[in-house]
Amino acid sequence: MPEINLVVKGTNETKFNVTVDPQTTTVVMLKEIIETLDSSISKDNQRLIYGGRILKDEELLSSYKVQDGNTIHLVKGMPGMGGMGGMNMTPEMLEAMYSNPLVQQTTQQIFSNPELLRSMIDSNPALASSMTPEMRQAMMNPEFMRAMTNPEVIRSTIQMQNAIARARTGTSPTQTTSPSQPSGNLYNPWAAPTTTDTNNQSTAPASGAPPVNPYAAFMDPSQNQAAQQMLANMLGTPWGPMGSDPNAGFGTTNTQTTQSTLPPEERYAEQLTQLNEMGFWDPQKNIRALVSTGGNVNAAVEILLRDI
Image 1 (cartoon, rainbow, N blue to C red):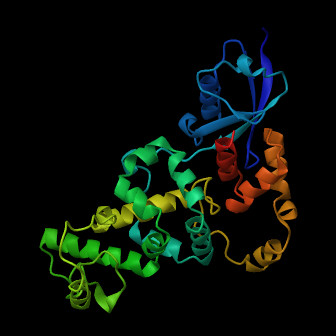
Image 2: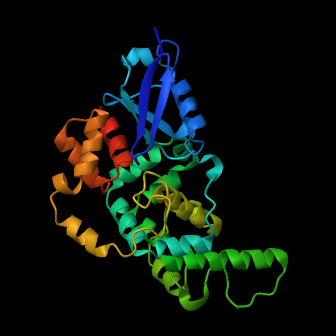
Image 3: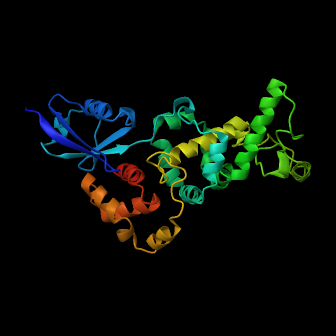
């Protein structure tokens, strides 16, 4: 079979023209070609969609009846996070990010939709496998995660980490505070219980084994930051409406307010067109997916693929 020309189109207007032999080219080979054209798009993070189906790496393109001039759609998955790699934001950067009103709004949307958060975690095997059952349970608790992304809690984490670092190096602290009691009495849900807490707990029945603490995985300040980094990584990928710029969105309040009053068919008209082009034709499912993800096409595709 002769070679054919294909268009690979991303959700962010990225477009590549490639020439392949569909009888000898597998999906993963096409991904490798895309990576050579744009090194920022790792083949491991690519999802290729054609006719409303996600293409499997080991399959030949001919098995999907791809024809000359057809368009294959590229959706970026979450970056690999083995060993929590790639999350290089400093605590100060995390604090600044979570102080951004638009980031706060986005995280609230995520926390109010456990199904979306579960999809964000499960869509990446490396991320899912790196989480203990306790970490997963904690992250699925909206109140816990709201506290985790509270700028004051992040500031507490920074103070605790600094105190631990001083203790290890023998440096004299500039403040007389203990790691479990940051200065200013900032709220820290992972600190040792206060006297009041201890007195209140003493009234509880003492019989039986102590209950398992689902948040034990986050008692270490470094684990606090790991969870904060994990969520920041979600927000900083195509999954997250913030994209790669945590400062994006300032000064757009009026536009957002206007858009929020529009029906979803109008608000997400462009995204609906993109989903149609990918082969997702059910308007109700498409709208539900876009509404639940705040209009993020990549995240909506993940939800739609789970229903296939």
